[in-house]
Length: 298
Ligand code: NDP
View (cartoon, rainbow, N blue to C red):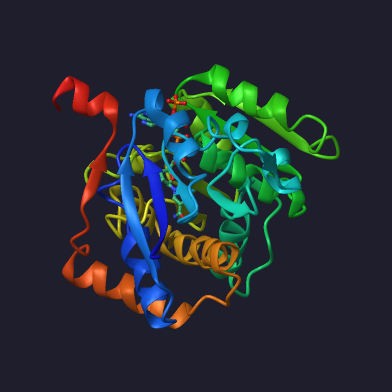
């Protein structure tokens, strides 16, 4: 029986996870197939229920489902509970367990971005979705003293701050309205800026006008495709140190692989596949649409 692992999201076509995980399965001789499932929120519960089939090792969960999947699994790890978002589902006997490997992936990427510099203590985070929750949790548990969250819909950023109320009791965690003047005032006080919105998936869009970016910031964009978003181009031009989301993708993916297979991830194989995809484009992988799309004929 060929085992199956799926990526559940909407959209999924831009994702490098499929090629990266398939290359890892093939390199280790694991009889498993990675599939891309494009599912609207309406179809999420059915998609998770399907994972109970014997042939499934688990799933990756991506935009926009990471928070909505929380009540649909049988058990959450301590970290996934604290974050309130799941990016990996793995099976434990008959049970579906919700994990969050984005936190470890982000921490590894942050270490790479900071390099030999001193780890900063203040950060500005753009976004308040599932990925932003993992970022904020990593900063709270990583010794940051002040983290300010900006989001298009302020109430979602306020919800995030409320969610972390207890774990952030020792530091200052604030939600602020997404106005240029407020952003500008915060950016001159910070050292680390993280884009955890999905703005940037479209190559010319950017969350922040170039003129607002001060020099000498550490800037991370969780977006990795395109490899250099307009946001990172602007930040590099402002003499900031920049990193895209590829290292985080690799590290969270390696941990996902280990949860599904119980084997150490072949990091060099996975990185080589990411390099190949960046140079030559994504592997051809069929995308399976859900019932809501089939019904609407789209
Ligand atoms: P969600 O759908 O949960 O959240 C999306 C976020 O983007 C929200 O804060 C949303 O704001 C904001 N947003 C979307 N469109 C706009 C817009 N036009 N203007 C302003 N804000 C906007 O997604 P995730 O949190 O799961 O993912 C966010 C990004 O991070 C994605 O690009 C994803 O690919 C990337 N990512 C990368 C990873 C990696 O390993 N490199 C890992 C995880 C995520 P609002 O709430 O106001 O709608």
